[in-house]
Image (tube, rainbow, N blue to C red; front, side):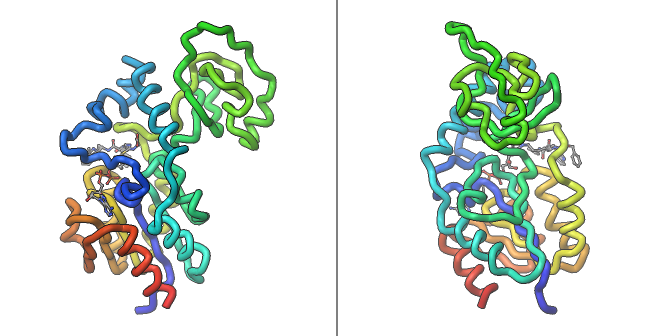
Length: 261
Ligand code: BV8
C-alpha cells in the first residue's frame, strides 16, 4: 500500500536534545512543580503569579535553545513530501516552526501566545506575562490593531505589565496554553487528518496524556500503518506496527531519508 497521507505526533522527547526538560522527570515533578499547581485552570485561579512565573521561565528558556536535527528533518519532510502531511505537536515550544515546519499545529497551545480572558482575544506574546509588581506605572499602550494583526508580539512594544493589547485590560492575560481539564485545540482538524492517514508516526512522547495518547488507536482503526520513534517504549507502544528506540536526533533524520528515498 503506497503511503501518501502522513500524520506525525510529537512530544517533549523531540525537544529534549535541544535542552528543554521533558515532563516525566525522575521526581515526577514538572520543573519542581506538581502539574496540578501550574497547569490547571484551578491553579491559575488559586495562584496566578506562580503559574505566570512557571510559564515566564519556560518562555525565557526558549530564547536559549535551538531546533535539533529531528526538528530540521521533519521540516525537510514537510517541504518535500508530495502527499498530505500534518505535524501535530503537544509541545508549546516554537522549535518546529523555527526549524521551518509549516504543516504544523499546536494542540496544547504555544508559550509565545497570550489569551485575554476579558475580551477573548489571542495574540503573539514575548517576555514576561506576570503582572508587574506595580512599582513603575504602566500606561495602556495604543497599538491594538498592530498587535491584533499579530504583526508584532505585544512585548516588543512594552517591557512589563500584564496588559491586554486588544482591550487594554490589566491582569487579564493568561498563557494561550491548554491546561489539564481543558479541551485541546483543533481537534476537528486532527480527527480529519487521522481519518485520511495512511501512516501515523509518534515521536518523543510517553503516551501518557489524552486525547493525544489515543490517536494511534484512531489511526489503526482507519487502517493506517503506525510507527513509534522514542527513547524507550511508550505507554501505548504495543499499539504500533513498528517501533524504533533511540534518540530522535539520530532516528528521525534516518526515517525521513527513507521516506524521501
Ligand atoms: C481533556 C500544555 C476534555 C501545558 C499539556 C482519558 C484517560 C485518562 C485521563 C484522561 C482521559 N481523557 C482526559 C484525561 C485527563 C487528562 C490526561 O490525559 N491526564 C493524564 C495525566 C492521565 N487530559 C486532559 O486534561 C486533556 N483535556 O481531556 O479535555 C476532552 C475530552 C475528550 C476530547 C477532548 C477533550 C488536556 C491535556 C493537555 C494538558 N496540557 N501541555 C504545558 O505544556 O505547560 S499536556 C503536556 O504533558 C504535554 O503537552 C504533553 O501532552 C504531556 C507530556 O507528555 P510528553 O510530551 O509525551 O512528555 P513526557 O515527558 O511524558 O515523555 C517524553 C518521552 O520522550 C518519553 O517517553 C521519553 O522516553 C522520550 N524521550 C526523551 N528524550 C528523548 C525521547 N525520545 C527520543 N529522543 C530523545 N532524545
